Image 1: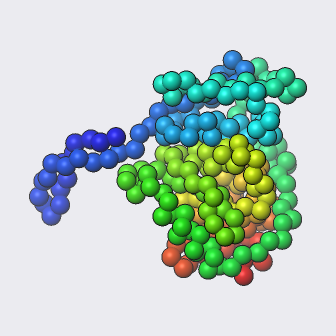
Image 2: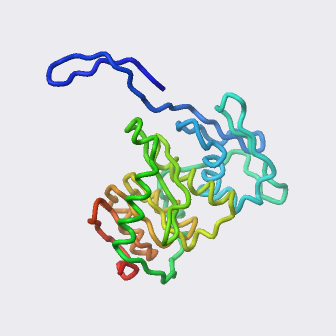
Image 3: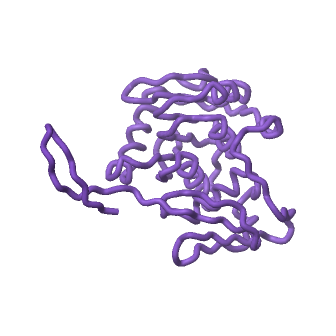
Amino acid sequence: MRVKIIRIDSCKKKNIDDIVTDEIPLTIHVDNNKLSTIICSPDSLKELSVGFLYTSGIIKSIDDIKSITINKNGRDSYISLKRHLKRQKTPLISTSPSNNKKNILKIIFNGSRVASNKITELMEAFQSRSSLFRSTGGVHSAALSTHDKIIIVKEDIGRHNALDKAIGEAVIRKLDTKNLMVFTTGRVSSETILKINKIKSPFLISKSAPTNQAVNISRKINLTLIGFARDSRMNIYSAVERII
C-alpha cells in the first residue's frame, strides 16, 4: 500500500510516497468451527492455513483435507477435513511450549552434512528473493531449501506466519522435508523449533538470534541450529557435526 508521508533528511522536509506492508485478520474455520484468527499479510493464505494446521498437529498431510476455500475478501479460510479424522469441537492452540509438547518432539537422526560456505550462498540467495522486505522493510521471510538451491520463499508480517506459509506450500506439494533446510530472518524461539520438528528438517538457519530455550531444545533433539548467518559469519549452537 502506498501512503503519503513527510520524510526528514538533514533537517529538510520532503513530501513523498512510501510503501507500507498490508496486514489483515485471517480467521481459520475447521468443519464450521472457528479455530483461530491470525494477523497476517494478505497473500499465500491457502498455504498459511495448511501450514498452521500442520504445525499445530491438526493434520498430518494434505490428504487429510477434503476442501479449502478462501472467501472473496480474503478474511476467512474454510477448511473441511476428511471424515476419518478425530474431530475436536473447540481445538486448543497454544503458542507456548508446554511440557506435553516437548515430550512429543522427535530426535533427528539425519546425518546429512553441508559446507558453511554453501549455507552463506543459500542465505544470500534467500534474501535476494525477499522482494516484499526490500519494498517495505516490514516483513519476515522464511524459506525451504535443498543443499543446492532455494525452492520455497514466503513473506509475512509475522515470523511464524512466514514459516507456516513455507511449510504449508511444502505440505501441499507433498515434498519430502526431512532432507530440506529451513531459512528464516526472524528470531528463533522454542515455538519455532516445535514447527521445524514437525517437518523433521535437520537444519534451521536464521539471520537473527535464538532464545535460550530454542538452543536447549535443539541440542536435545539434535537439530543443527544456526544464528546470525550474515555475510560469511554464523554461530552454530547445536549439532555442529553437520557443518563442514
